[in-house]
Every structure is written in structure tokens, then in C-alpha cells.
Image (tube, rainbow, N blue to C red; front, side):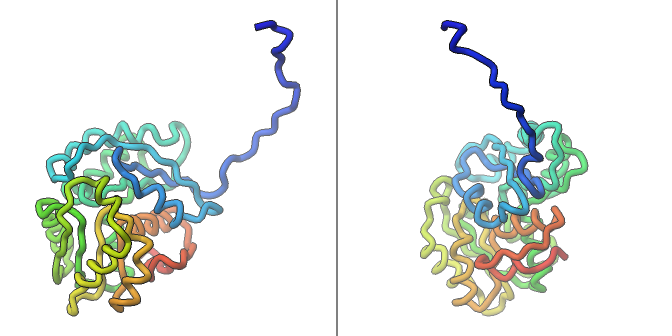
Length: 256
């Protein structure tokens, strides 16, 4: 190329602070089609910015495959804004957090990002039920039975009463992401036991946040979903008390 066509711009460059507000790190599965879209609706962009990385996952969503992500979490977390501070990090997989354990997930993430609070959907759901003063719950999952049963065991282990567990029996999280809103609404309302005080709809791949309001209206019970609870917990851990209308009673409450 003729050098006469190339020149350095003489405009003085002014550097600004960058995106305003808090920084939320998000570790999504390599196959996740839902979480980033949900967070865009749940996290107000004027108060926080979400930065995403991915962790390799191979379907089907069995406990064995979910555990394989454990050794990969530190490397994935390392890719989140190296050398820049984050206010909180969410590992966006409910079933894996249950089978690996919330503490194991936090330890793996904090090996790369020391002292940053780590949110898991399972622990966020527990905090959500505490905020809602609900101890007896109904659970709906999209998983296979071998992935669904540990979910009930997890909440029982943490002192909650699981009134019933309903599951769709789907093996691939990319298919879970295609489940219709109406299917979720109908299944959740059917799952709502008369004895339960709240409904938990598990799985970050499930596009459930748009169904929350309809389920709460029909069932008369508060609804907690994986992405709703995780985003709420991220906002609160970041020191943000913002209320996000339209996605259930939980989004107006403080972190207990």
C-alpha cells in the first residue's frame, strides 16, 4: 500500500470511565441459550454491566457430566476481565451447583478471583425462600429423574420441606431452552401443591422468567426461578437495592 494513504489520526483521544455501575461476572455453560438473555432483562443496564464467559459442557445433563465442569471453572473465571475488579460472579448452572456443592463451586471460582462473592442458582434460591418466608416448596425441573432427585435432596438437606417434585425428563439443555412459556405455566401450576408456600422452577437454561407473573397470579404462590434468583442475588451482593418489576415478588425484596 502507498504510505501516503496511511496516517495517524491527530485527534486528541479522551478516555472515559467506561460502563457505569457495578460489574457482574457470569459463567455460562457452553451450550446455554438462555441466561444472557434473561440477565439482560433482569439487570438494569444503568446500574450494572454483566460480563460473560463460558465453561465447556457436554450433554446430556446427567450428574456425571455436570461434575465434569468442576475442574474447568477456575480457568473460565480467569477469563472474566483479567486485572479488573468484579463485584460478584454467578456460576449459571443450578444442577451442577447441587451435585458439586455450592462451596466447591465458590472455591473453584475464587481460585481465580479471590475475595469476589460467588452466587450459585441453588444457594440464591435458598436465600430467596428465606426472603419470602417460605419453608415448604413445590419443585418443577426440566431434567431427567437422575438430575431432578438431587434437587429435592439438596433443599431437604438445607432444612426445607419439599412437598412434591415434578420433572419434564429432558436430557439436552438446548432442548430445555426451547420449552414454551405456556408449557412452563401449565406445568408449574400443576406442580403447585396445596401444602407448599412457594414454587421453585429450576434450571438456568429454562426460559421461565417470562412466565413468573402468570404463575404467581394463577397459583397464588410466589415463584422462584434459577435465573431470577441468581440475578436478584447478584444485584444484592453488589450492593444494589433496585426493584425490577414484572418478574415476581422476589425482585422487590432485600437479601436476608
